[in-house]
Length: 118
Image (cartoon, rainbow, N blue to C red):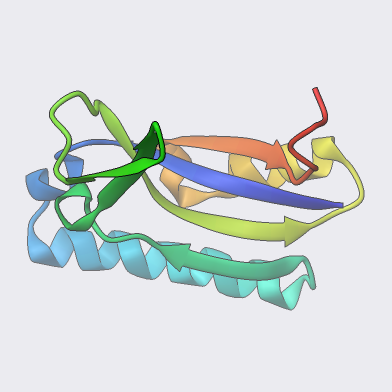
């Protein structure tokens, strides 16, 4: 079954690190992804750009409303994800617990499923 490990990080957290610290954390995340790949469970992984480079689109009465980031109301952002394929939810949670980002962010485990499932 496919699961997303979504990295929820506080907005502005990246700016509190030096370039060297940020690169070191990113390297740890790359090594984690490499380990998942070697274990045969990683389908994809990506880091996402900061909210300042994001755009939100909604529709109201058929009219698109486009808002460029950063978003004042945002307290956290999705910083990246790991898309994994494991047999159980418990296995996905165990992977999330191994993720280095769990030290400075929240790693949300979500199964992929049709939007009509409740």
